[in-house]
Image (cartoon, rainbow, N blue to C red; front, side):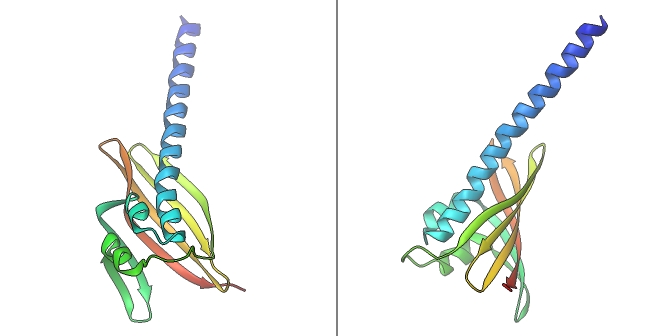
Length: 138
């Protein structure tokens, strides 16, 4: 009986690990919509990452800002040549249907650190909020 119980526990743990790995891959896919859309000045690709009501909050020269992320990017992204930048996923944390991702977007003289909060909505991971910091490169 003890062997069966331990086998069952190990099986359930492995199922949870498989589900979490699958969610991680789906979160990476969502985050890459954002990164690739921004790099390629492609709003339609970037839009796939965000929930329609996603917020973006940040500090600018004028202080605290709180905007709808999609409205902001729709106005900010203009079709054109690919941006000269390097992007990376620094970390992803997943718990159930909630996750966050830390991203780095590097330009020549500065970089952004983005913190994306995601929820699994109707089986699909979507960014529901973003905060970020802009830092000068050394």
